[in-house]
Image 1 (cartoon, helix red, strand yellow):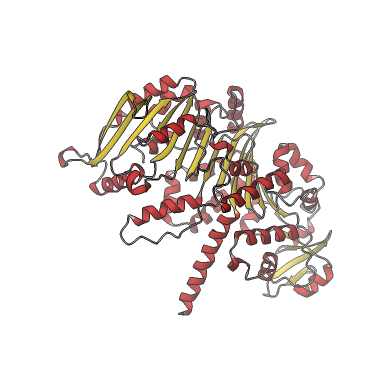
Image 2 (cartoon, one colour):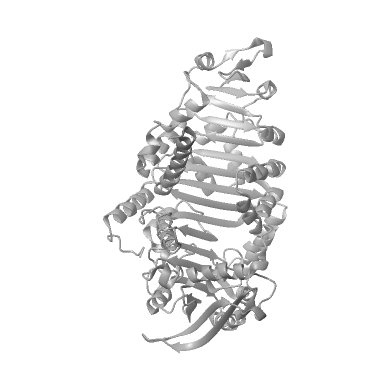
Length: 608
């Protein structure tokens, strides 16, 4: 992001809580949720239901999924749909009724109970052979209403309404269903599986699992043996261009890396009236390279910060991100983690390695600009701060790096300049840097790119920086070097004051509430405002002939999507924790779009 922001070779939501009545309601809901629940939005407390639900899962299961309370999940889904304010999502009735009807389940089902599913080997998981434990009010009534015995296929064999052979076993308020009789014959309930989990994960992780509506766990060996099949299945459902992009970003190798050294992976899903929260924990082998890296990071760890957005202006944003390099053991720790995940670090600009040893963190945010994309570009009101022990050295490095970007690459020519300590119109001094780009003359071009590629890149840069190109400002402020990507003094003033003499973005009450769902001490934190980004996309579309109106208008007062990640040792092993929060308004729009598209396809197929 830094390289994209300054250029080149790589391509107020303030404390004012009364600015609109709709915003007041959003802030109140999130703030009240924080007060009422230890996780901010978690309104359904499952208590020991999670441990009770695990009791039916055999201790040798290599992968399992549990829903501690179907009725609680159903209630939470209903509340989510109500708050999403999308009437079309409620047409089919209660979410649980829809699910039950899809599986053809009739009488005897107990929606107040827990549902579980598991597999005892990687091969069974890959083949879809496992066991599902369905909660029942009356086992005999449930079996008689939904299945027909087929003694010719075995004493436990039954046929479903579709004629499929399954095997059944009654156990502890559940009916176990499996395509294989031997899986039922070998079944034995576990004892204290939740306690075993608690011995491998910290208290915060266990609280997250107990609060969740659905928890999935898979051990590392199975993750390793089945990841190739999982990746292939994912690729089959993603356009080739998308997967090619993932490959370019190293995502495929990241999946491989997590599989080769992971001891177990747990993912928890919590549905609430305000949002859907997803949390994941990967525990790595204690004697593996990831745990060794975590130990080195822990030994080098400085004062990790829980406010990774504290030096950004507190106002409405498109997106905001922060990286706590101290929490990752410094720049070398971050690079070590990226290397361990097989992420291609060669795309990092050379100047990063020069300033890296003194770096403590990086924060960046894009804000809506009063000039709009056409006049000022998407980064007209953007803020970047490089937190460092030696801001003067960082400034000197940038003063060398920006002019070095001049030259011709492919068919694109860039001209850059840097001027230090320039008197500003409204007082004070700041460094000024700029970059302009144009199609290079024919005799200057090299064979690394075409005119067409250069034209596309030039268009993209104009969208980012405006028609005049990049004209930015920089200043040393309070243990960091602040950079903006316009010459607007008000933007530089806000960027310089944030977290020093004015509240930073970390004090936004909406983000504070959402942060309850994210890792306690994040190394990386990102928030994306879908409503504001929709506004930006509409501005961009209006500049493209024939594209005006293609992007739907979205409410700009929706809460943002949140993401956090942390990495470090827990006990004697490395743990990677991540979490994502999807507000109900965002979920409603996404699901509503899917339904609208599906209905459109049906009308098309029907000729209507």
